[in-house]
Amino acid sequence: MARDRSPAALVGAATDDAFEITFDGRPVTALPGQSVAAALWAAGILAWRSTRVGGRPRGAFCGIGQCHDCVATVNGRPNRRACLLPARPGDAITTQEGHGHGELGV
Image (cartoon, rainbow, N blue to C red; front, side, top):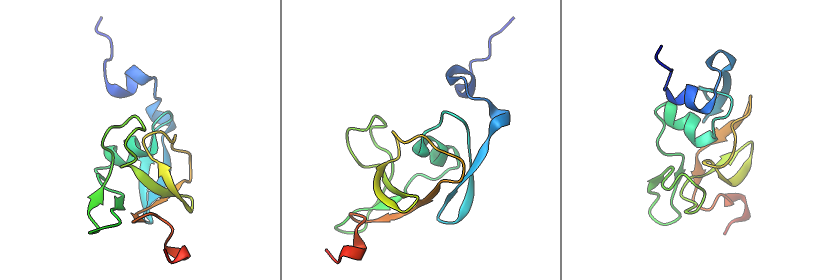
């Protein structure tokens, strides 16, 4: 009997327990145990912030929380490392512009 070696099976994710988060207002399906970055990747979203200089798109790079390329605004809080943050039902992820503190005027 062959074992299920899908990524979801390897991490013990239950696909029938999928829930919804949003990215810039559009629905994204996430699975229990997925990071915000993994849920966005699975939905085909590869960039969720822009650089301070030049506005270049960025998403996950290292995937282990070392590089900070994956920072996003999650539930109104900027600079959250999407590769380390577990996705939770109802999370609202928005594209982060620059350093994420535009309201400070810096």
